[in-house]
Structure formats: C-alpha cells, structure tokens
Length: 275
Image (tube, rainbow, N blue to C red; front, side, top):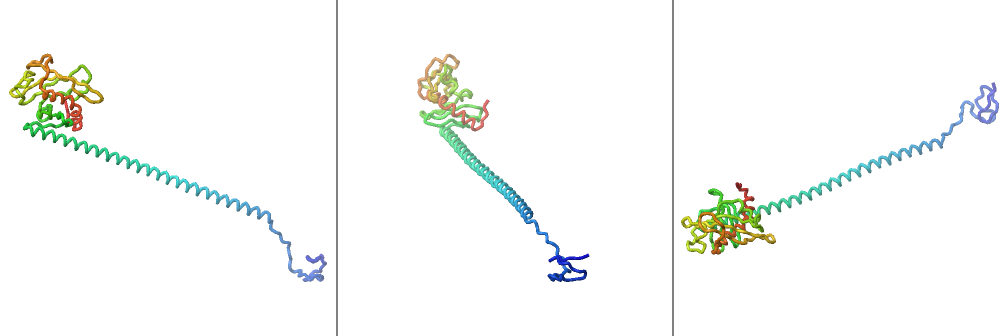
C-alpha cells in the first residue's frame, strides 16, 4: 500500500526513510498537538480564585466576630468591674462614715454618763446612773439599775436631786402632750428645807420630802414644754388641787417632760431591758 509523506503528501515507497521531495525523516511520527483549552483553564482558575477569596473573606469575618466579641466581653467585664469597684468604694465610704458616726455617738454617750455620775458623786450620794438623758443647763434625767429600777433627776439651776419610782410612761412624755391627760409621779427630795413654801405638799420621811406631781405638757414645732403642775397635801392620795410654790421643785418636776424622750433613746442604745 502506498504511503505518503506526512509533511508534503508526496507518495513514498516502502522502506524509504526520507521523503524524496522534502527530505522529511519518515521515521519520526508527528502527531498534531492538542492545544489546552485556555478558556476552560481561565474559568477554573477564576472559580478557584473566587473560592479562595470567599474563604479568606469568611475567615476575616470570623476573625472580626471573634475579636469583636472578645473586645466587647473585655469592655463589659471592665465596666462591670469598674462599677463594682465604685459601688464597693461608695459602700466602704458610707460604712466608714456610719461607723464613725456610731463611734462618735457612743463616745458622746459615755462622756454624758460619766459626767452625770461625777455630778452625783460630788453631791455625796451613792447614786449611779446606767443611762442618762442629754445634759444641758436644766440638768438631766437618769435611770438607776443598781438596786432595782429607779429614776433620778438633777436640777442644775438649784443644784438639787430627787428620785422617782420607775414608771415606763415617764419615758414617753410626748404621748401626753397637747391632751387633757397628765403624767403622775412622786418625787422624793432628800434633805429638803422643812420650812419651804411646799412643806405641806405630800409627806415627809425624816429629811426626805416626797411630793406627788401631776404635770401637763404641750408640743409646739417639735419642742416639748411643761404647761402646769399640781400637787396635793398629805400622805393619802387625793385630788391634785394644790400648787407648788418653790421654783426649785417645779424645775425638778419639769425635767421629766424636758428629758424623758432623750433618756428613752439612751436606754435603747445601751440595750437595757425594761419591764
């Protein structure tokens, strides 16, 4: 069968190694080369690049979310911590102030108690108070607990003292203010003047003069004031239809109205149990 030169198409005989016309080496077979599909490769490359870009973008988004969440959590924690620190600081300041106020009040209370007992000691008495009202130019109202509960009043103006049997009602004089109700008590004045203008009031036991008291009061603008005092003569309780004429006795009785509330506060602060 005749063959042809694959290059120029000239017929060649069997056994010939070269084309008689163009001299092409007939022993080398040259196949047509298939050119790569450039468009397809470009598309694949583009798709690959797009996929890579999507992955990069996705990773970047995740990173942003993670970093943002971490930063947000950090800022939240910082805010909470700062808030807690401020709260704790304010609490500590308030606690310190309250503690200091309490300390100052306790210190004042102890100074008042010592002052009252020093006054009683200087009066050559064996009386000692466990709680005391405020102490001012009028004097003070105290509670003795040593041998049962008893009250003691000290009139600074006349430098006089008197004792009163315990009655819880005397610690709440405001309850009787601005009413037609009176407070009642007996006050015993030791070594009273037997020739005083009030010598007929109540009764005497040796040098101790016991004077029955009926006292009214009023409260105006938060200030409690005594209104009037009556008494009766003799040892048998009767109608309170006599007046007190000695101002020193009036001043003593008025202390119950003027200092009853502050004595109650001090008793409460000292946790003294009352019947």
